[in-house]
Length: 278
Ligand code: KIV
Image 1 (cartoon, helix red, strand yellow):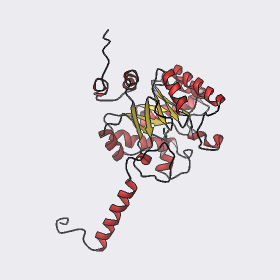
Image 2 (tube, protein in one colour):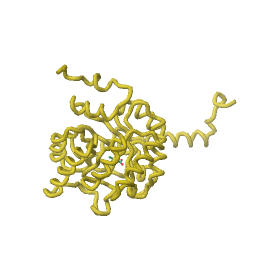
Image 3 (tube, rainbow, N blue to C red):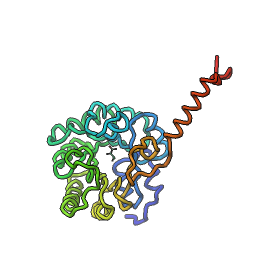
Image 4 (cartoon, rainbow, N blue to C red):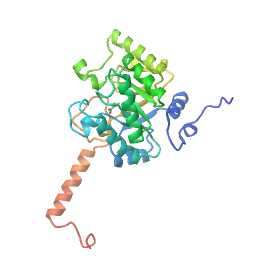
């Protein structure tokens, strides 16, 4: 067997990113870049830019629908967003959140929800929040051939149990539970785990202890990949400012300035010109 170290292009020059590609990225030490997407046009741009994984996150409840939490979004709405994203994607792996109420406490329901997502949207995998309690659901989904991404740490579907969006697993007992949950999810067959808003040292330790990739959000640079909500990264939702968000653009300003110019042109009858008319 060849012992040659695989380069970035060996691993990433693929037509489609699969769960297997993510595993190869972990082995080769190539960080996974993941962003959220909820619609066709954005998905096409992000995919064309070379993103590895697009998450149809239940953060759609916040950034698309304007709800305060992720709890209200329904399975039907998630499927609709996933269908739009899948139509815009050629290369990225598309992962869809199973929303609140579509899997908790019932592995049969989890399976039924996962099957609906895969069948009706054409997405490639689902993501479930939770540790030990979701293991039966992960196993059932995998038996049906559905890849599962886990999600530990700050799990927004449990916000009313936590009572706050502060950093999780700072105390020893919660950190120990998270270490155990990560191992249980790996053993159950998850292909990756999102680690949200936990201390960087803990995320690094967990990432090193697992053979599957971890994808961090507010979990420091020691994870095997990173994820951000696209609206935060591109400066579209600017009222959410935790320290882990890096703004790569200020599209809110760019859009507002463009719209102001458009309004001026309309008022001045500078738009449309003869060239823009029939
Ligand atoms: O719904 C979402 O956008 C997520 C990410 C924050 C990981 O779960």
